[in-house]
Image 1 (cartoon, rainbow, N blue to C red):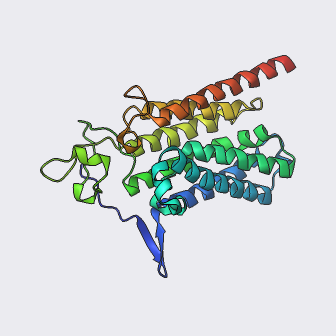
Image 2 (image 1 turned 60 degrees about the horizontal axis):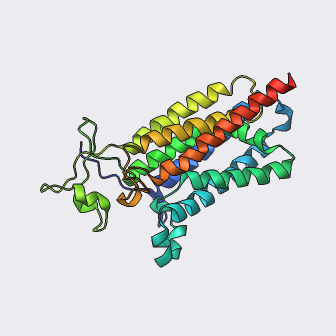
Image 3 (image 1 turned 120 degrees about the vertical axis):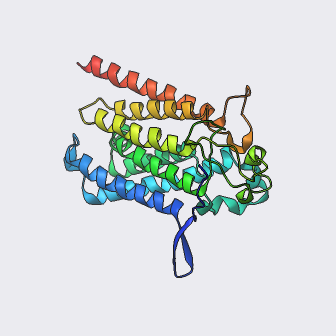
Length: 279
């Protein structure tokens, strides 16, 4: 299939362009707010939650995602450009957000929220983790619309061919162009991540959190499964800039996902060990 030429701008408000990428993030925050309202009705300390606190939680989280995600991207994946064009850090509408940077930003933001409202940090992360995957999935749809983060060449029938005229001279995908002016079929790895990190991860964490769990357990499940899904998809996703981090196969995404799995496993061990000791 030939990748459709999707306009990155959904519409204009007066002369201001509204990008699909930004709409995906906004939709993610709205969905998170609605789902958190549902979770608050069944939370162990539901009397501690009201609409104002949930709105503040989403606001803190949104700031953490945007600031941390953008800083993580330019520092982890696009540092060379930052050195010659420091204003690029503010061009979020162009795409380029790092999940791992966003995760660090959210942790800091939720820590600030927890201090303000006298919550434990892991009480907040356990509360918020089940609603996070759908926002991640929408972000991957934004990547697909932007035509970025493609996978390796494939013979599968759903492989996507890109028109070479739409690629920049320096784009590492140009090496896959043929005489017809299109690339070899590529894995739509953004859609794989939408399915695994968005839909599947949501189902796993949401239903795990349906039953009472010891503190840190829900956060641990989220970290373990996201890290595993991301690590696996990276095997068919082209590395950023077309270069591997090490060994001719290890990507930065995989390198950053390993600590997530380890930390998530540690949180699960601590959660259930503490529960066993208290019983």
